[in-house]
Image (tube, rainbow, N blue to C red; front, side, top):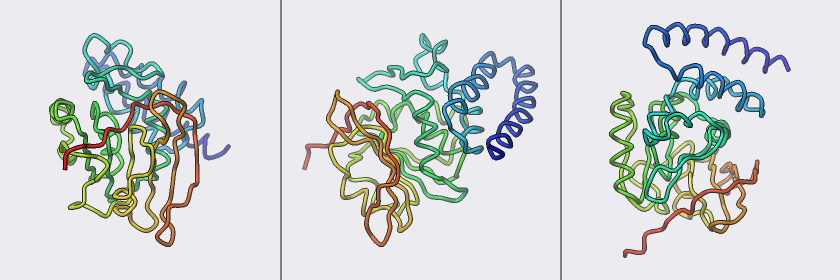
Length: 238
């Protein structure tokens, strides 16, 4: 209870400063971000102060089609094109919290999508790598991320099932699409003590979000949550 209170106090203090800055910058979305953090995330148990502050800062409306900007801070997923979606804020917060990202950690995101999750991670560490099998999504995400000065994020198009071997090992790996199994390459690229956050289950049906920790070379399940994600696409090219 005390820790939650401290988080709330920190948010209120920072939020006051953010609101003043927002007023100066004429940002009509800052109040919506503040409400998203308090009413959707904190109210549902998200308590990591750094994660809450990250979601309170990243302009989610910049990562959705302009026609949907007014709905960007509502607690649901939104379409971003190519049959993909941007996850609801609560799921982004939970995945970020479960990943336990510390400053200096090296993090891989599988499934770049809009680039929003990568931006949130970049508020937590300066070593973020993101991969997506759809080049058009990577190109659009890179454009938005550059415009917001997230130069520390490295993005590329490729098969997420294979991870990013040349940059391994990673302290945390987040997969933002549902796989039928844990890809062996991702397990291999996770450091000892590293965290893997991944939804598993069949496409279009109930799935489960898992948080694993690599312990003595094996993945140990630690947390679960019922979810529904778009499927993780595996390359068929050899």
